[in-house]
Length: 278
Ligand SMILES: [Zn+2]
View 1 (cartoon, rainbow, N blue to C red):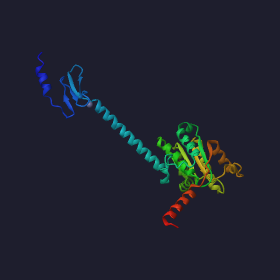
View 2 (tube, rainbow, N blue to C red):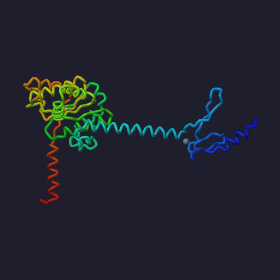
View 3 (cartoon, rainbow, N blue to C red):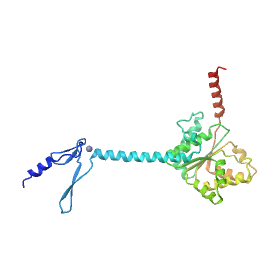
View 4 (cartoon, rainbow, N blue to C red):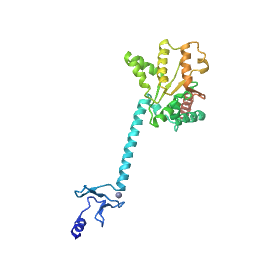
């Protein structure tokens, strides 16, 4: 059989785009990787057909695009979680990288907690950060919440007063579902636990919130200005119960040191003095 007409026909084929050429074997190839850009498929006894295929560079480009979309999706999800997880915008920016490390021991301990969160989460292990006002307890809690969100898990930083307000403001029927929604989070940080001098209603609400999270095994990070040694001796049995629940799952860490608020105030004062000269 004389193949010349076929070869001639193949030689006359014009590549469809400038990144391809017709190789001497008559196959369309990529100018970059020289991989084939078409393949002959057998039509089960009914002849054959040439169909386009992708070369190595196209496959690489496709994989990069898939990865880019995945990254974008993950980024969007994290941004969404961040906006849901922080009710205070400034705390959404809190991170160990931005931490001033005035208290390196605490910074390191909390960073380790965030790093080992996957294992600690299984046992519902949380933290109790206690100490005087202004020592950065909320900031540390926010750093952990942010780190957990960054790892792709939903986490929330809120406070007992805020939660109680939300629950009290809801219709009766919505209250339990509202609390149950808290258990969708992998970590819940409750800022500013003040169990002393509370009304019966507040204690009841706090117990309900803690019970819901406790039953679901959600790790908690609780910050408080209260003194644990005093609270464990509280005369109110309900306060003791709240306290027992917290200590059962939350590792206590004393956050002490100079008040950052006062430190910041002094710094502002110094700056003011420098500028004003008085
Ligand atoms: Zn190629």
